[in-house]
Structures are given as structure tokens and as C-alpha cells.
Image 1 (cartoon, rainbow, N blue to C red):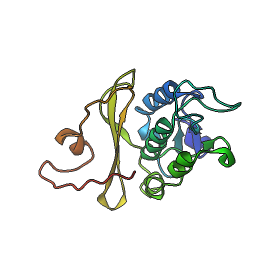
Image 2 (image 1 turned 60 degrees about the horizontal axis):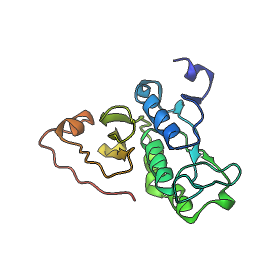
Image 3 (image 1 turned 30 degrees about the vertical axis):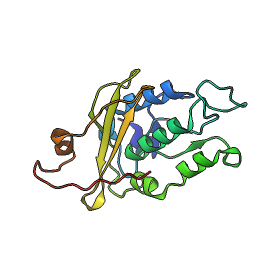
Length: 182
């Protein structure tokens, strides 16, 4: 609650160096939206670039233990959370897929939306092993951004139904067009 009186962003959780750490910091952000907005941002941690496409592979010194898909999921979540997009790792040594992730102009636009609203969890509970969530936020111009995230290794069914869209301020009979930013 005192973060805004001390600076423009504040850490909300511990350092993350792997996928479980990212999920833990996402869960921490669930109750903090009221503290974020233009001029002050909840900061869950740095973005982790991938070190290997295979989970559990040895990483070079300083490398983080996330896959490219996990790195992309984290970037998507940080955008909908309106969190600072600070990359951990050397851009010079970054993989092509990670560079593609971090240069996605449409996802960056979600992050930098002028309303500055932090997204919230709309569907699901804590992101323990094998759980799935929907997170979302309203954007300027009446749009919304949603992230469907699955913490498991297997495919999962997750949906944003009428209650989910109503939580974003859409009416029950309102027609909505959706588009994948990836």
C-alpha cells in the first residue's frame, strides 16, 4: 500500500528463476490490482528468457530454466498484468523465438495501454501443478485482453464464459470478436 509514495514500481514477490517461480509470482499478483495504475506498477519479477527448448536441459551460466513456450506465457501474463517488461538475460545471446516474443508489438501495446489497469484472475484458482486460469483486463477504446494459461504439461480445458466476460464489463447479450495476438 505504500509503494506509490516511494516510487513508480515495487516488487511484489521473490525472484523467480524457473516456471514454478513464475507461477508463484502470478498468484501473488491476484490480489494486488487495486495498488497498480498509471504512475505506479506492481512488479512480479524480471522476464525470463529461455535457455533451452527442452525442460530440464542444462542452462549456460546465468541462464534461466524456462522453455520458450513458458517465456512467451510469462510475457503474455506480464502484459495483461500491466507489469514492467524488464528482460533478464543478454539480448545478444537470446534465441530467435525469444526475440520474436519480446518484440511482439501487439502484446507490448496491451502492456502499455493508457488505462493502465492491472489484469485480474477471471477463471480458476492458484496455478498449482496442472491448473488453468483465465486472466484479463479492460483496455482503452472498450477492448479487453485475455490470457488463458495452463500450468500443466498436458492440454487443459479452460473457458471464459458469460460470467468471465461480465467481470470485464461486457453485457450478457453483447457480441464480442476475439483475436489471437500470437
